[in-house]
Image (cartoon, rainbow, N blue to C red; front, top):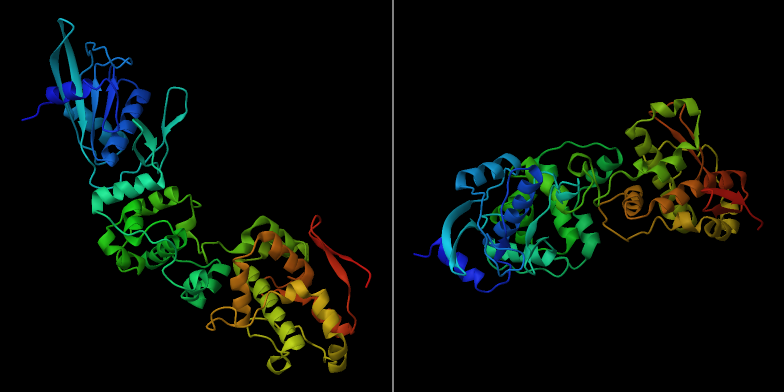
Length: 443
């Protein structure tokens, strides 16, 4: 039977450290920083597949000294449980060894391999207040040191735990993101825009599946192991058939660098309702009147504003390019603004001028570009979830003259392109990107 002493002498003869063992002159665990440093190493060795800390070897790697502090298995276990609450098994032995015609009392601590990927559950600081461990960190051993795991390290940990799994190089579907997104029900898009959401297993699973698909770094089994789910059951988690532990969500949030509220707020294409972003909200609020009613706007109000915008852009597009599809009444979600009769002759003679002035607005609707299951305004809104805030700001500025919020639950939008059609005169304007508004220009 190989004893701790045998292992100590075996590794000491190399006079160097390795990924599987570390030298320490002493292992003091009196202060919090000392304990935290040990816990960091314990996390790393356990994830790596096990390792040893040889206690009683000076930094020159050649000198053995007596160990004063001894720690039995129970004490090490108590420190791990009370601070990390992690499943790390440590065993220690202390013994005498002969060195340079004298006897030295030394020790060895064995950290056993973990049975899952271990993730730090709390922040730990050194004596200067610097983070030694941050919530969500995964540590391992690389180049003889304890380090934060990279993607390649995590893959090695996964293979140690679950065997080799094939890593997909990209999406599993030929149509990339568009097909992935087209699989989502249209209700998810509308609910996100309304900021409507219920935290439950189904929604948690859907979000995790989106994260996996868009990461393009891990196979499904690797992704499951990374965030702490059983790889064999990952499909059931994605489908919402199995409940997901809160700790899994915390781990995924940290590892994937997600906003803290990601799993508890609606998202579409991994993005929150874009009207919540400062630049876009500013673009909307500066057009609202009366200003004293702004505080009464609700998520439903913003939803209706952007639905009206998308709906009217689609109908304006039809008026210029697809007259057979054009209807002046709009969608039931969008209060009609066409309280005038359109002069067909004006449209015939000025369709080019209108399309040039509003080319950026008209670009928002691209027939047949994506899933037929979405309505015209939904197709436009779908595209906005892929656009920058500055782009959406420009569309708002170019399209909208004012927003009447005297009835905040039913805002009424006045559009610049419909005003041009009503007045039978094209207003030539250009977008000022610095001031985030339109300004007049000559023809």
